[in-house]
Amino acid sequence: MSKENSSNLLRGLICVAIGAIIWFIPAPAGVGPQAWGLLAVFVATIAGFILQPLPLGAIAIIACALLPVLGIMKAGQALEGFSNGTIWLIVSAFMFATGFIKTGLGKRIAYLLLSRFGKNTLSVAYVMSAADFIIAPFTPSNTARGGGIIYPIVNSVSLALGCDAKSGKNKRTGAFLMYSAYAAVITSACIFMTGASNNVLANTLTEQAFGQSLSWMSWFEVSIIPGLLLSIVTPYLLYKIIKPELTETPETLALAKKELGAMGAMTGKEKVLCVIFIACLVLWATGSIHHIDSAIVALLGLSAMLITHCIDWSDVTKQHGAWDVLVWMGVLVNMAAYLSKFGFMKWFAATMAAACAGMSWMTMLIVLCVIYTMAHYLLASNSAHIAAMFIAFMTILVAAGAPVIPTAIILAILCNSASFLTHYGCGVTPIFFGTGFMGQGEWWKIGFVITVMHIVVWMALGLPIMGILGMM
Image 1 (cartoon, helix red, strand yellow):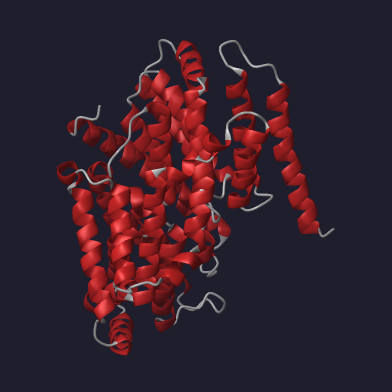
Image 2: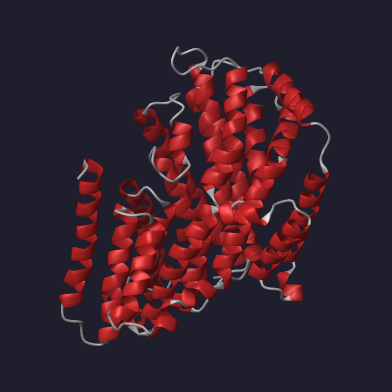
């Protein structure tokens, strides 16, 4: 057996052991055997998501199959999660990402902005941030957006400017461009509910556990002002911290114009995708008027892309990330929902409320948000972070009197912000870190500064905005 297989086997056995320990511990008073058995499988699944002895989808399938076998759920109940509309919203949005990449529209948007505003290093950073902001609503994967669209472009710009990590030539410039582009990807994930799959997971878990949820537009209304502030401040702060050697970058303008020339005139499919893109945004923003579910809007957009051949069905079947999300999120969300239906969450909330009696919920929110965010040092996945910690922290805070929706938004957003802490913060982080322009120590130091800034902005500005919007 190879060393890797031995390691995976050990991690798998640890997950099984965790579930078995919970299974055989007597359930506390007020918790039924179904709820306690489900908790054992749920916690073992979360451990699997963190340790990853197998891919997330494989772990979820195993958990789903075990639920009826162990007598915890009926087969139909175990499979209910795959009918969740919010998860299908994410699946459809992954297909939009495919459309942006396949038609070239994502690159065209970025290069158009660079050709007009890329005259100096700082403006290049702002242009990449603007490009990511435009694309983010339809790419619920930092890896797809950052790795598939943003990184190749900023890497081309770095090469055009003569940035070389190995020789050290213009290394600070390369470090600035790479980290600011990475920061843009993470910040956009905070702004849009469909900017990251973990956002939708958090919203779905909130709906299942507490009976409340946000619309796409409500999330945007809360996050747009703090998000834009961070989008403006972050590149400038990084510029001052990293101190790139190059300030003026006429090469960027030339590169962008060259790439646009090579792409030629805007194709018919790009134009069609623009129309579909705008139409979906309008439908999402006016959901309170026409009452069409956000997931159906996304599926209509996917249907339009298929009919107009912006993407083909083969592109849909090849989008492994989307179907992987459907599987593991469908199983995980369903288990969380049944923990509530079986009465476990009610018992847990009552227990936490008794333990937190007399403590200000706002004080608890601040303290627990810091703990929740910094815990990401131990995690390498935003989805695993949400799966492992979101419901527990939500339950504690709601039991102390915190309002459900504001608490859910803050915790969901800070999970994205925590990605800055390490060079393995989320799926896309190693792509930018791997360029070698910045060492691990510097990455961690800068990441800590940016993360603290995010915590302060989202707490100090985000919460008052939610109050003004009547959410508190």
